[in-house]
Length: 305
Length: 253
Image: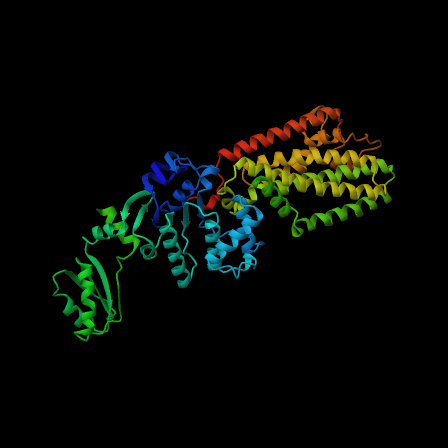
């Protein structure tokens, strides 16, 4: 269990984290925020690399800074992309396994196990200097899991992973969460996070803006009109069909004539209508997207609220 | 024992071929330089050895100590790999001491190799002066490394400061008149090595070897001061490393 009570962290005159209070328990929790929001600062404080300026942080009841007892229970995958490049992936993970306290034989076994788990067993004997971004990311994940920690902190772990790797990684997180691990994943991409968990901590400029179930936050956001863009070669016909719906607030035509952008108060009902446009009315729809379906919009809503 | 593993792995890293190759070449070069010096100088072989040892071997000691000491923590911070070390279940002070000890051993091996080369170049054999120098080099490795590690923990760009200390301070201070040599590590090492005083006219090599001043430090004082210096630096370094943050600077949000 990770607990933060009124935690602030200053870097000189710049505030990195501002009066954050929260608890993080078993399961996957996403730490969501734009670049510079304070995600890495929070991660570094929980992993005991840096100290809070004010407030209190505990991990299973203990202060984490420079505390080996805490490190026995924590696995950390940092955002940085730096390694001992002259070592192979296997040597790197095995080295860290020894540092985690395993004897030589057990370290080899654990290394093989986690490398298989992250799909790197067959490529682990090449030097890290020659690894792709995705391979490096997998090695970082492997070292975070190697001592079977109770808490796993992953700082932007999906960076550089291909779609298959992402899927495998998300499945792996689900497995770990199912056996009671506490997992904190930071990301600045909402779409990524939604695939991993419903439980989020939303940071913005160092402040904890919201916490809890992503669905609740979504519903809150859905009180505001959502913008939806529809790409179509028949903008006039599509607009004519949609503008009559009670929950469509307004419609704007793209000046290039290849789409419309509208606002709706009931996004779920509105999205149900889109297949009908194609199937019943025979209108041509090339695609649709929501400019509001991103973090910036969520922050805007929450800050304005 | 994690500490033993940290020591062994750090030593293996410091002594890996690509890293020590240049030092092996330096040692071979020292042999050549000492051989050439003996063939052109009119000094006795004993004086020639003292000169070569002071000018090259003890400078090599300070140089390697500066380089390996900054690799203990400072380089890990710069390369951002420090995060992997600091998030493992080992107390920071143990991590620091184990890695510092590895640096001391690496520096001692390289500088002793240099001294052996000079001895064989000058005397053609293992000389008694070499024995005394080896002892001083071992003490010097511990003193310089612990001092430089402490410096690297406290300030940024420690390498520059350590090199200025090794080549500027340690060359200039022993040449100063009076008792100023009491504030130079090199002077204590000279006293531990029980170097015989050189005779004749002083030249540039005497200046580079820090042999212009009068060293009145007793060997026992040299041992005491350098042992205390080493212990103080190690203790302060361990405390400092345990209480302060070491994260890659540019990563701080």
